[in-house]
Structure formats: structure tokens, C-alpha cells
Amino acid sequence: MSGGTLSVGYLSLGYGRKTVVKDVSFSLEKGQILTLLGANGEGKTTLIKAVCGIKKIRRGSVKINGVNLTAMDHAERAARISYVPQSHKPGLPLSVRDMIVLGRQYCRGIFAEPAAEDYRRAVGILERFSLDSKADDLFTALSGGEQRLVLIARALIQDADYMVLDEPVSNLDLGNQIRVLKVLDELAREGTGILMSSHFPEHSLWLGAETVILKGGTVLAAGNAVDVISDENLSAVYGTAISVFRDENGMAHCGPRFVNSRTSPDGGDKKSWIENTLEMIL
Image (tube, rainbow, N blue to C red; front, side, top):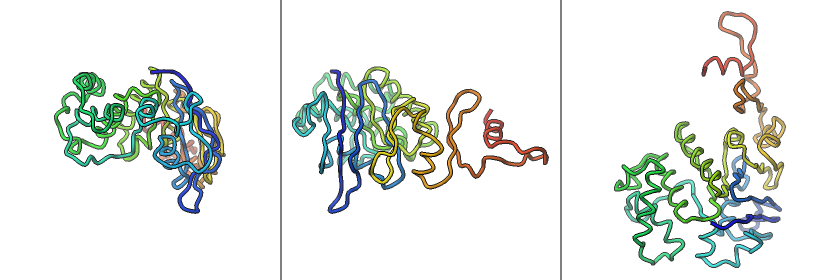
């Protein structure tokens, strides 16, 4: 994979006469993780699709190494950016192995025959994601968490510089959320740039991610997660009082402010919500 920077400059997007994203700018280096946070309807998915070249841009640009995405042909774009949607329903009953190999088709051409090397590489990726025992299973027969890992594996086999994911942990249980986040953290440490939208501010804090917070289709705040994920910003974005704190182990959490204190069962002094929560989980 080559180096470089993914730059989004003053991007404006919309549908019909409605503008849903206005003048959004940010940049992502290889090896970084950048999360897009915001309430429902703030344009995160629309922005993700524009970065991947799926959604037409009204104004602004998406560039890699200074080259506009619109100037790239399909194969060059696929070598630069891979895309992981929230979900995928293949038109044909594909096995897990074939779903992963499909990622190489984006680089070779949709009508090209898969090469033997593609299948050899798929074996290693299956092992990495602990999916080797599922290689011959139908993709549609997998659990939600397993399907999400297969979609990430399909993107990984493209060998793109940047992986762009639309809410990669939505509708997953906590265990599968952690599995997916661990894989993304590993990929970033290996040099892949990760851009993902999310409804979980805590995940940005856990990953130490660069973060762009959207409100009203524009950037409310941008910077490292520890700097921009604050009581004030989250409360403004989600329209309810939210507190951000760290426990005694340094783990970051976000919680509703209305439960910031509770009465202990024995009627003694009130304890903070943090103390009660830690007692339950430790």
C-alpha cells in the first residue's frame, strides 16, 4: 500500500433541493482512525458514500495524495479506498470464501475471473478473522457479527490504503462490537487509514481516534476524541444531558446525567453513578 492523505474539503451534499451536509472538511492519514459522530439524520451515511465515490458531490472535493477522487478510474479508486456498508445482501447464494474473494473483483473488474492467488490470500484472511471453519458456509447463514467481519475481510483483501465503514458495529452485541473494534485497531496499527461513522462516542475514546462531530450537517467540533468528546458537545448533539468520565482504570465512558447519583440500598449516603456502575461490573 502506498502512503498519502485522504482529504475532504468543504464538502456539500444533498438530495433534491435539500442540503444534508454543508462545508465539511477533514483529513485522514494512513494508520489513523477517524470517527464521524452525530445524531440520526446528520448526514453521516451520505458523507461516507461521497468519500467512497458512491454519492455525487454538490460542492467540494475528496482527494487522495492531492488527486481528486473523480479523476480516478474504477480500478485506481478501488486500490485507494475500500467500503464496508452496514449490511449486504448478495444477489447470489455466495459462500464466505467467495464473498471475501469478491473484494478482488473491485480491483480486477467485475467480470474478471478470480485468480488462484485471490483464493490463497482469502485463506490467510479467513484464519486471521477466525472464520476458517465457516469458509464453505453461506454468507447469509452467518450471525450479524460474523457477517460484519466478512464484509471487513472482503474490504481488506482489496489492499486499499483506506477503509471506509458505515456504522460497523450497529446492531451487534457487546462481544461482537469489541471483536470488530479490535480488528479495526489492528488494521490501523498496520498502516491502513480507517474512516468510520458511529453512534458510540465511547468507541472513539477507546480507540483514541480523531473525531469529527456533526450537527446540523456541519462540523460542530473536530480533533482527538479526548479533546472534542465532552459533556457540552455530546449534550448539544444528542439533545439531552450527557456526562463524559473515566473510571479508576482510565477507561472512558459516557452516561446520562439524570442518573449521576443514586441512593445506596441501605439508605446511606448517595453514591455517584460512576461508583455504583463500577461496583456492579468489578
